[in-house]
Length: 210
Image (cartoon, rainbow, N blue to C red; front, top):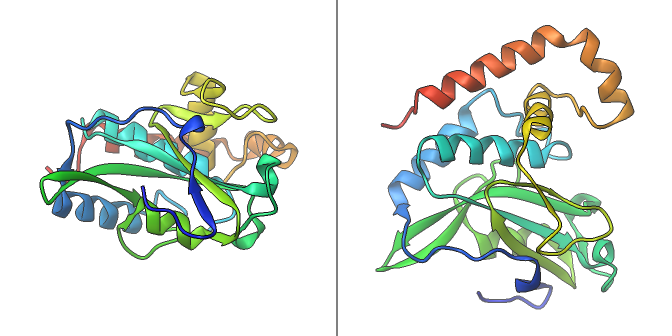
């Protein structure tokens, strides 16, 4: 993948990607528009719950049998490598990504209305989020939920499970269930969480773009 002066692809953190399956560009663009306009996703709250929005999209794409991955970007400072930084002083950011058939090959496009107004290539997505050299981006399977703090490598990603599915639904409801504040909100926001999960499950069973 092309690199910019402030950005590097890190294969040591990445999972292998398939070179055999992808979707048409028009399909990917329609997916982007669907997720951008769906009120289940709080894209304006870009500073919170990116891992839950990305996870929710990948769960849906899995159910709809659409190949998908996640792409992550880290500041060099957060990784303890260099002084690189991201926009908004983020330590990291993550978004869902789909392989697209383009000119008889596969390219990878990111679905992230929190940071882009339209479908965007992974290289441009990462370059836009990197603020200062050096920053590092990577690709994982769609079922990787989050990395293990302090030991980020290819083998320490937490995979999707029942607990982080709950956190994903809570994140869609605007609650960070891992934080102290979020844990305190859970009791008082049970109705909102229940309604959010019901809407999510409805999407799972009714693919909108068929």
